[in-house]
Image (tube, rainbow, N blue to C red; front, side, top):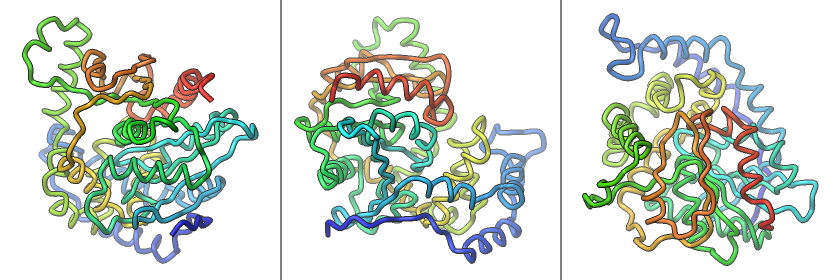
Length: 360
């Protein structure tokens, strides 16, 4: 099936009522007094967010904001794919396909649409099994199968040459789009390059102070916040029973990576989309599928550029150069974080614009 169908976000009122009823009946976890977030996402934070979700958060306003942009669905490789498609007033503009990660949704990119669409046609899909694409029903939806679907999506839209942009999981998918279609992808722009030490001690002998600090930051993250990756890569269905049934449970689980310093509306909108469209379970399966995939060993060849932000994964260039043959940009900023398109949209948009300038 190659039909492209218009789409609008229209959550039935009954689903909103059901959500509010479930939130009102939340059975909160216990917590050692004064422990804060020492053991993970705190009960205090979850209670505050549940209260706001019930009494202060306006889903319909965010629904309207999403519906302000043209949206569509199509079936690719047996999977429903939702995408935002905003065409620039410049008819000859370079198309870009922008990919979010977990636990995000297309909401990640709402704050850069107006800016980037002045110079680019924008395609912003929901990952298979995430949010507005709905759940996956087959095995194997890893970064490589997703990248193949993106190549098909851009071809279906009539885009013969395009750029690729990604964050988080999108930073895994995007280079693979370039690997699959090097004759069509002009370049790849990501906010993380997930290249790690190979285990060869020689790689670690002459690290600079900055590189050592980046490795220490990575080690701290895995030792203190890496449980989500371990569980979702090994036993996603075990977790799914809790987060598919309880909105407060989903909030607590996803809140570790999309809460904290981010504003409550942004956090809740991403989580609410997973709740309403039933993708709490299928979105975490992405980790399992990716962990079980066979990963290429040859480096990518399409030009790649990094925009790294302060409160985020710290990419290390010497390892990135092992995995990507043509690194043409390596910019780091002392602002922003993991959701740069939302936190510092003007900085990210300017970086994307400069990187793709002259590549059309």
